[in-house]
Image (cartoon, rainbow, N blue to C red; front, side):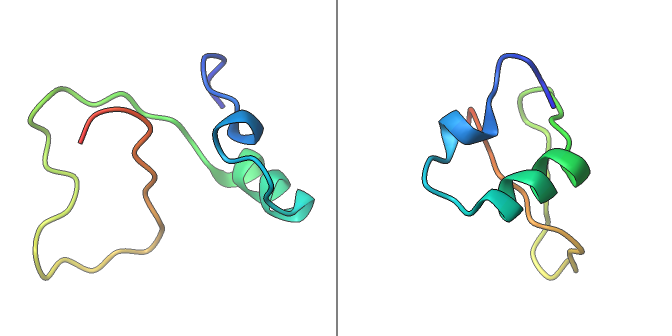
Length: 54
């Protein structure tokens, strides 16, 4: 995952297994301002965590 973010620092107190799964399967993306990440009624297959922005 990205060097500027540490999952353990951003989300302290989670179970070790969850950290390992997030580090193994997660990815950090930078998206341009105004990008629509999810539309009403759209199905999702995974969780999104927004680290900066809204």
